[in-house]
Image 1 (cartoon, one colour):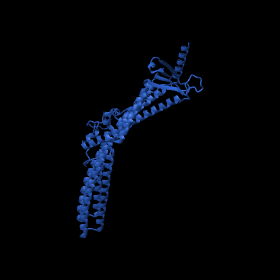
Image 2 (spheres, one colour):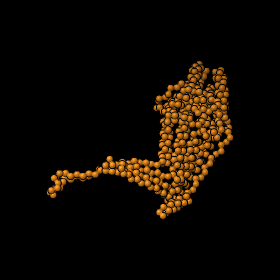
Image 3 (cartoon, rainbow, N blue to C red):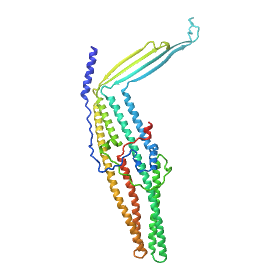
Image 4 (cartoon, rainbow, N blue to C red):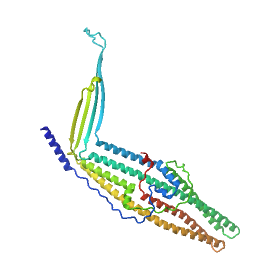
Length: 472
């Protein structure tokens, strides 16, 4: 009779809990990828994309940064933490077993009977009692509705998202090292150009002074040429500062103090390698670590929602213990005591707390779904932006090359006309100033073209293995 009553109560609890719960919603893919990108090349896209520039010293610096950079090490430790949390959550699927051992001694001591009853010699009297106890205690929650499993899977997806976080950090670091490297090369090119321009300005100043001494030029022409020379010298100092700043940046990216600059040889900016194969947008979704990170966060939120729904159902817990206790160690394992118990608990009234937890989890899941869709759209935009910017920057650079050539020819012709007395010095000064600026603009434009290619590689590239991954 008692057994039937217990079963009836259990079934009633199950029915009430099932009536309060609701199924998790279906979360579908939010964005349909386009059939192709606007442009694409034929060169294969390597995982270690920076090797396409063919610069061995650059390759060495990127590998050093991936090994020693502190920000990347921080991302790696976050990944290790997330993996440990996932392992801890998964342990809830297994029973726990604890072993206990206890020893106790008690007693008393007296000085004997001082009342003179004749039965004691008056010496000290002592008695003691000892007890030894050993036992095992086990506890296990039966995962009836998958709540524990769903929570463990949520942490596993979060650990995967942390892995993609690490790979995205490695990708960003490699791009930052390459970008800093070529900014350093551009700073050296700018410094070399300004030194050449300062030398040319000094020679012109000497010529102007000589002609002024013979009365062929006005003093204001000498002042204007001196002003141009000082302006160029100012830019030389600015270029030197830019070189030092980029060297400091490169050193810190490599995990070194700013003044421990790695050895390198200045060189000019390269032409971009052949345009890589952009592939299909659908492949980009599967390849990019930031999109995979958003997807794993979405999956984790979906599992959190399922766990919150399952938390509205009853919980079945099993406990058991086995112990032995004796006053004598030789008799310790002769007698055993054991217990087994099962407990079924179902939520009935909680003031709407569990329902609110489900609503909160559902809102987070939909938030992650929107973030996943936005990450996909952002990736498409970044690829299209990089392709468009590189295309038009290449055309702008071609136009700038023609402008430099024309400005150089115009400056030379105006200088000859000025020396022959056909032009005023202000025309020469204006032409030389424009030519100097165009040459500096060309270096900046070449750097921008290289940076657009770096951005394209970064937007198309997927994750790549680092030394930490292969060693773990």
